[in-house]
Length: 468
Image (cartoon, rainbow, N blue to C red; front, side, top):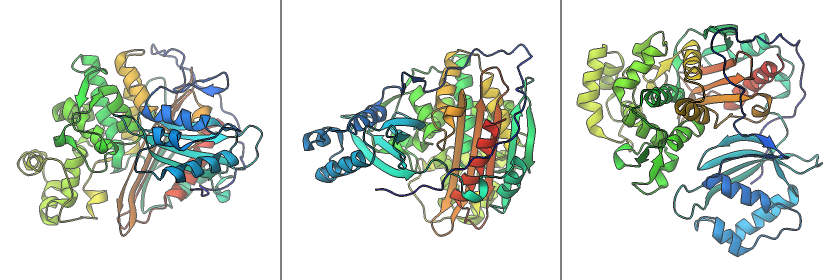
């Protein structure tokens, strides 16, 4: 279960820039990192996946012996237990006394971390651990890959920000990019811009507006982060990680928000979409400053969008895509909503992956970040949003460079032609400074977007931002 993620490091410096301080009446308190590093260890919130991760790491202590009984107590019965004993022994031999050295993603059911042995120059381990949310909360997924300290290809390691932006624009046929800041007036400003006002297919970044609906509803008192939402059959969405949990599993709203953003769980999304309600979500799209709100309204849930891809002849689906707003709402009411959850369909309209789905521009996404960041500081709403957007960083070597990291990304893929949509959006903030944003949207009608090329160039841009 070992493979090389990407390339070696070799970091280039750029001149430091003067930090821009807040000067308006909005003065957020000091930022506590999402996962503080205290006494040589990251403080991770308890939960099924974190608890199993901590056990696995403890098993890597030199001289430790992992038994079949321990494996059966911690792993789902679908695993080959003797094989897992051998796997843990192999990881221990390669990473003795390993400790978590970087945190990429933490949600209740999935964790992604980097592990290192003290003083060991060998490759780090890129560890993914998944666990059931309910029942015995056993491990359902575990991988350890070699990681050599950078996601950047050698050719990208010396690029300037302008060069990296220009190269990003060559990686798909329809790119949009914003490297910028959210200034003290809560406006999005530009450092580098490649079609940043041009709407592109967002893939799962549309969930940022769903989270906005959650946050605003908590502020308005119509939702609570502790409200329990049971998982119901009517909201089971394609690709939902939590679909393997029993129906009626009770999820606190805060966990669903973290699952929606941290691992882009589709069923968590549709549960929250239904709870907030389309009327409020469509208002959020407008309130959050989307320049062409009709491209997102009505804000479809996951199953609803997939019905457009899979359930109607193309000509009929296009009547929705190209229709007036009243027609769209009527079509949704008459044709899409009655279908319920999507479980596949007789069609697959590849052309709609870029033209018939959620669309917004990098500036629209930046404005959404800006609005979410101005939720009442210290409030239940802000804490819920902060935890959800802070659950994932997308790649290593990001989180430890900033006090606050917010991230959402997504992709839409066809089996034959690969990725048609690949999107990344980060907000990166240090206390007392205006935050940076990096929003990189790749679209291609014919597919074939290389996720590792995009990862490498965005990795370089993230590195350069951390040096400003």
